[in-house]
Image 1 (tube, rainbow over the protein chains, first blue to last red):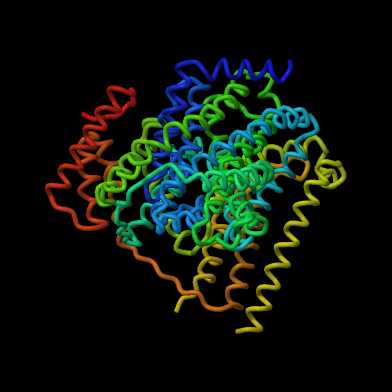
Image 2: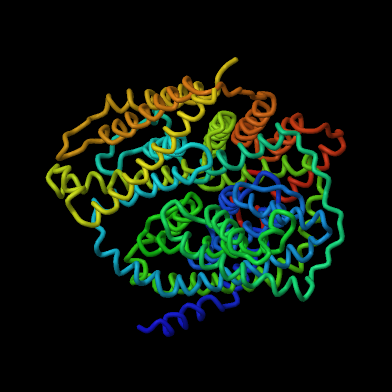
Length: 497
Length: 140
């Protein structure tokens, strides 16, 4: 089937009134919740995930994808207008907030919206051509190769974590261990359940995510006692002609950077933002203005952000391996809907696959049409004092955790993980890699055991099979590089100290 | 003053021990046929090593302070547990009221009238979620 035929199927599915509505709803709700203090994409998606349970598979995935981009745009808005970043929009704060201080909020928000659109469109080409190609490669991946790929993912995410490599890697491992709680799929023995009936099926994805990323962030915001005055400035959205022209070059650069970085293990929007910003600082005609309110600073990173967010779906849908924590959560959502992402997905659910890709572009359009003009309404949400907002957020978290299996036990689980998230935050460990470990742990174990059985316990097969060897080799290089960085840091701090 | 890095490492090693010692009691199996205990044990050992490395680095490096306020996290946990217990034993209306009452003790001070307003708003939202979206909530 030619690509155009596939796209036609995809758009046919995505353009039904039903799916269009859910796409729009996802974008809007995602932006609304993503704006709120203390709720980044991970928390937003996990909070809204239970809403999608009752929906059919394609509608729920389309809505979730919309929520994701919406949340990212919401983050951009709060970063630009109020210097309130989540981990996912720190770069937007730099030039974006400077532009606000100069009274240029409108053009900044417009630039973010338009650049996101450009980034998403360019990334779409990547999706259309690379996703099926990578799917075809999936044939080369046996159990040993999957093991090595997961390990590479852990290593790369850890390397990218702000903070130290060891911290990130440790979090991946903790996530894997948490994923082991419950009945062992192969032997049926219960592990780490302490006889608690509620843990027999394991720790739920939603209570874990809500606890670590929702409740923990909420507590952090309460602790810091932030009293942000709501944004009261005027917003004139349309930029000047010169500013408008300046958006395109960094947006195109950012789109390409983001599209490539999104596919790589450990990659994703955060890395793409930094890389695009750094590139613009080196290459742009207006680089001296950057850091002081140059529109390039907003455009480049917004485009890279969106592009990476979309291309990071490629490894998930084609190989079934999520490459960063948000994709891990998405994978959980796929599985809840009964879809196993992977090389087989494109054959068994082509309408879903292409429908999702088509709806990603439609979501793009919605973001441009809806969110950018509606930004005034979003900003008025900030006028609600946090003292009123946070009980509501707690309430939604409870509903979210409870409604998975109508069991209050999950609320207690969520509270426990809230405490865990709090502890790790105070210790200044970045918790996001834990999500990757949690989702991928079962896959790692399953493939490890299968590989062992297939290879008759021969460990050397992991390094002699070509694909696996390459993946392990890259992991080893990454680890060696990170350890070298660690050692040089230690030496320099000891010499100075 | 307690060094944050050391505590970090200790917490990780403790987690590794917690999971590792338990997985030892499960069947380990062999290299050819791994049992349920083998994989958690391997992961726990890796985590333990990472934890020890982090502790070692922290001891040899500069001291980092550790600060934590326990008031807000305790209030939030109590609010959540109360919500769960009340929703199970009484009904969710009681749970929501209790949630608002307890959680508003954290954060900035809020008047009783405002607390009541928040509770009413949440009750209304819960009712809508129940009727419109069909979520199974044991409201009464």
